[in-house]
Length: 156
Image (cartoon, rainbow, N blue to C red):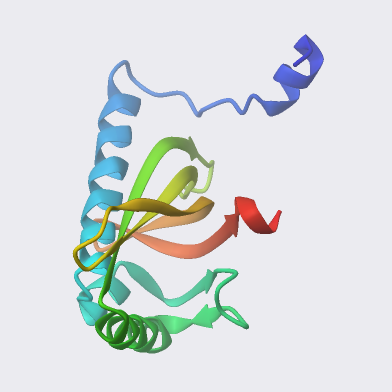
């Protein structure tokens, strides 16, 4: 990457006291750890509650974006039924989380998401490699997803 290209990719962070960004970053990591555990355990309502009421969840495995908490929860319940039929376990792992605070108080995040699939009695394997881009906003003191766009490496 050239110096000019590197400069274009750099996004400056708003002024913060030393250590503030580290605390924010840890908070975001905890948010995602909790959210993915809810998702993988099919806690539909609780997982949907980590989104704003009017959130958009855009993922390539669905024909159209999911909008709002009720649709989000219904999607998780469908996933639980499909997984029960298949006998396979899916687990999501997020890493390489980039957090960019925005002037309006929201956060833009980008992370790699690996989806592991384990057949009953079988070996775990990487099922999908994705990139997850979110906009997060504070609501009642907690982070909530306003918009999530997931892309898959195999569909790029």
